[in-house]
Length: 271
Image (cartoon, rainbow, N blue to C red):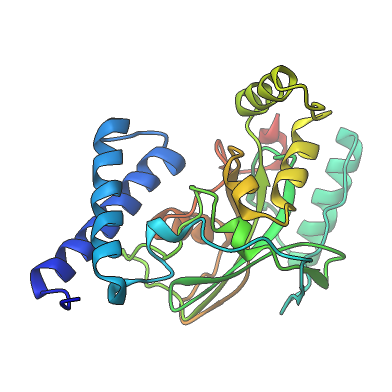
């Protein structure tokens, strides 16, 4: 089999960049630029070229999202930094007490906060090394989680390689986020299961957890999971001095922050 020419290599790289850009527009920005048919044409052309030239195979190609064989069990992953859980606040009085503690600790009269909706899904950590996704794991007990990398790779809103833009791509990036099932997708999935005579899921969180923790990545790939990112465990090689700066960097890198997140000049603005 003849080795790929320079023109073929360039076409493959162009197709990979173009397809990932369309994935970002569709799954992250919810603003597609091409029709499904046009997207499928690009994808099939890339599949064809990679089949004709196996030496061009790359694990971060869009065609390799679903490729792993079923697992016998999940391996464990120790997080570099603990994935801590959040405390709940039930009343405005508790919120005011929290604000007072923070202002006292920082010795400031006023403190800006970042407010974001709580997405009820499965807490995960994604690790990127030199911009390439290397590990995806569940929170577990906060110290040790399960390695679900093959399943994470099937989620279309997860970039296999970070986009390059105004913010430099870190040497190492640990992203914390939530894998979830959007409400309409959850309802559609349950309708399909009911019509097939299969048990339905009790709620979107259970559906997300059950879908992410499949030993066969092909099952996960068939479920319309999504990812939102809300925090950083570590970012090596790039300076992120404020939480809001990290959220802006996510968008630059092709990661999706929680929708409707905003800066609050006080906790009273949270509503």
